[in-house]
Image (cartoon, rainbow, N blue to C red; front, side):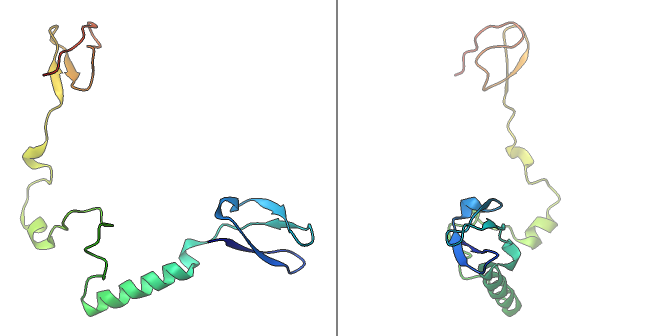
Length: 124
C-alpha cells in the first residue's frame, strides 16, 4: 500500500511507505514534493475497524476474531474472579533464579562464571 502524494503542479502519484517523511522529485515535472507521514487515526482501515468494534460492543458481542491467534492472552481473565481474589497475579509461581557459588556469592543462574571469584559454575 502506497502513500498518496500530490506535487505543486497537481500531479498525483503514490510512493512506497518507506519514503514517509522524506522529500523527493515528482516523476512528471521534477518539482519537489514532500511525502507526508500518514496519520493512523485518519486512515479508512482504522475508522472501519473502530466502527465495527464499537457496534459489536454496543450489541454485547465479542469481536468476530476474538478467538483467533492474534490475541496475546491464552485466556482472558474474568473481571469478577480477578477482583474477588486479593492475591497477586505472580503468586507462588515466582522462582528465584539465583544460585550460590562456592565462595558464598549469590549469582544469577544464567551466569557461567562467578563475578566475585571467577570460578566457572556447574549447572545441573
